[in-house]
Length: 112
Length: 113
Image (tube, rainbow over all chains, first blue to last red; front, top):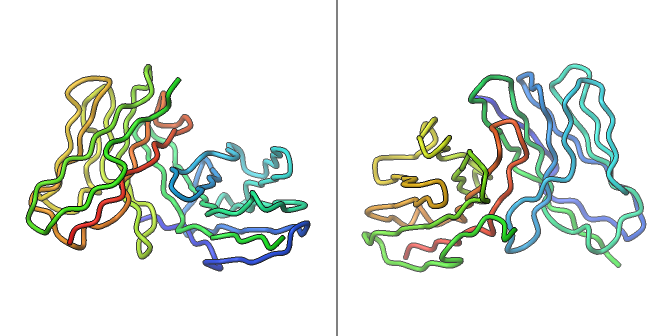
């Protein structure tokens, strides 16, 4: 089946630093999504990308849909302590009943 | 809107017992999804419904798992009999359509002893 690869499993950065996360797939997706999960909560959508090459920002977050449609990245600039959490990428193909495939997530820690 | 509501938030049970997890989707959402999250396998889609009808249950691990959606505002995921390897966080999510944003509930943390 389709799989999304996110690595490393954990990242540790200093407050104020920028961080970049990558997500790759062996399959083509038509939609790429980035979610954040905080402890004890469900994932929350951060950014959705619908077109190859698309670059979208949401505050300090920027994400891009790779040209090959097999990858995406998420950048967080000027990190703050509340950025801690698990960041998931998810891909979706077209089709009436297509479903999301999630990566295993990257746990981000921010040192004050 | 209260968002997706799940109950219970935590469930501890013994192996062999029946477990029922509950979900109330966001009003007006036609799609409901059940996911399981573990450290080893991440987030896995178990089953999803469209207008109360199961569309894809290929992620349901085995016959011990069953899901129902008797009406637009309620769904259950049942495990009978439960096993220790079923221990995980189970999420319910809902959306307007299969391609729209999925809104997740807070999850049910299940521990099977």
